[in-house]
Amino acid sequence: MQDFLRHQLERYAQRLQELDFLLSREDIMGDMKQYRAISREHADVTAIASRYARHQQTEADIAAARDMLADSQDSPDMAEMAREEIGSGEAELLRLADELQRMLLPKDPDDARPAFMEIRAGTGGDESALFAGDLARMYTRYAASVGWKVEIMSANESELGGYKEVVLRIDGQGGDGPFGSSVYGALRFESGGHRVQRVPATETQGRIHTSACTVAVMPEPDEAEAITLNPADLRIDTFRASGAGGQHINKTDSAVRVVHLPTGIVAECQDGRSQHSNKAKALQVLQARIQEKERSERAAKEAAMRKGLIGSGDRSDRIRTYNFPQGRLTDHRINLTLYKLLQVMEGDLGEVLQALAHAREAELLEELQVNS
Image (tube, rainbow, N blue to C red):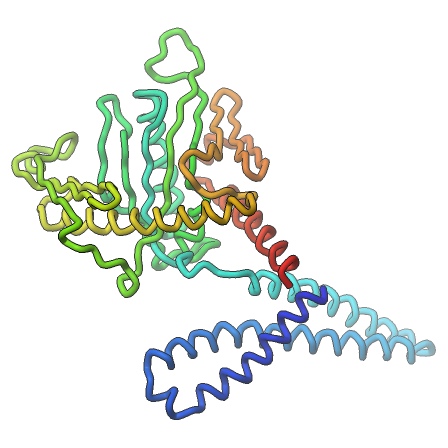
């Protein structure tokens, strides 16, 4: 195990002793907010410290097996047993070291939260809107495959199908995929520009066109930590819903548009049947967009100092190309190329998301080594 990693783990073992002491104090027990915060940290630190204790015990077992091997020159059976223990112990050490390495990586508290995904048609006219619809279907199918729930918060459909813009809310509660319920953690690197190369349905001469959509993924704000919107900073307009939805949805001015005057950020919702529900959904999306703006500004400052492999997630970043004639998907950030585009478009997105997660882990590990 690398020295920098062992040093970090020793600090966790020491911190566990400090937390055990804090949790035994009566004044801490009387302050529920502080007690809950310390209890959460205690659970996280215990998981790491206990895994490190197993790593140390395995090292001791290997050392004992090596001593036994050295003393068993006249006993082939004992020597064979010692070699087996050394082999299994070394394999266990590698597994534990890999787990500990991942456990030490900095965690974004928003990773476990539900997410809003905004897909917007870009260059390419009707074909871009059709591709936006394809992306929404791809993400919805992936979500269904891992047990996540998807709700359409707002949708602006195009005349030929697809969307000019659609906002999805994805909730991972009960998810059973590799990312569990961590929707934002799994999808955060989908933010950016998505380019498609294919023959559009409207193309009569069989020419390949290039179109683009943008995707923005935002964590749903925590109710306890959500920013408070000043009513004086909001302009709320109601209007009659348009597009698909049947007769009922078009009879009343139930659609709601909310403008945050200080920033100019807009959110609207027209999918619900009541003005009240549409307003609540629009305010949810508005809060997420305001917080994402602040997050993006912080990320831009960090990116000015160093350019990460994954990038900032800004809409202007061209992150991926979907080439239908070649059946090829290419993620430009991590040089990933897969020749299974049709399966991916049907929701088989796990390999792409896992590759991005591993690339991010490698980045964080490198930073940890540099800063240790």
